Image (tube, rainbow, N blue to C red):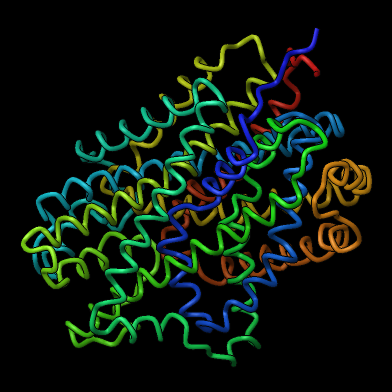
Length: 500
């Protein structure tokens, strides 16, 4: 007797969930900085080339696989070829690791949201920096795994409680939630953008962000940065897109949905750059500092530079200006993060439930959330930022890239790409053909191999960020090999899957 698989309530619910998974924290703090430092407006050329030759083709592959096989990543690969199941489990193992530290970043957002209410982070640049050091960057050594911040523990608990509540009942609730959580950060970014554009110095910041440096186009680093940004920001290789598409009926469009998701993600990233750099331009003017010295990448931008910029805003809303815009910014981060976070957990829950359908979904979700919460405590210690940096680097630069590479090899060269293409085209609004097959079989694998090789060469030449070798082995290579081992173990484990 076959089990009736859950279905999305509507196509918009699926599209919004997919966009929510893709649009995350990196759209606000990573894309603008990457674009500004790799050619400004000129960066858009390699970025959209990467979207068309890697992002969309690989997204169509993952969507098509999930829909055609009606299963999560492990189940889909198992139904494709029994020995390929480990690819899906490997992807989910890497996703689990990423979700654990991603939730820790959201715990930092909760702490800063609370601090924004009272401007607890201080009124001066030095005070904001000191608050950042006390809250996040508390030690520069990975050995200092102690002194867990209880406020951050509360934030982590809130994050995992929200994730559990959103997904434990299945995709029907997810479909309703994303109708709120996906538009909300876009609206809030627009609020930040409108405020930023009216500030003195905004033009300077936007010029730094978009002024094209055409010479950057002949630098390989620019193209690798574009492909890396596309690959990481579209949730490729996580197993999420395969799980989400498995809740679509067969012969429903996925190819056009891939275009919508990819360009929706690009639009939010592009808009976020205006919101961020308009305010940074104003901050640079107020502090009489060059914009390139004010701009920062990643966590430093979100938790140190931007709060400093908020403190410098003119009192357009009276004495509440800094409180209100601080709250808006960190609510934006939380709303960006939650969709990506619960999509990663959904992928894992779907994978486990597909293989052991007799285990109730709420139990799987609860066990994962509690386990991830406990493991995530290490990122709230004095050495939390160090370990997060190490694990993030290896998970993204090696784990996900390797998943994408073996997906292309498995579909393009082992299982055969034409049957999957035919299944996709049954309901396609945009048919896939030669361009898609060439990208999956040749272009995308070649680029991913290049990324892996160049990263390995850098790693051999100089230890990442100067961290001790033992920490890089424990937090880096051990994580990758452990994920692969989990994949092989779960593949050899007998399940009780009911085939639809």
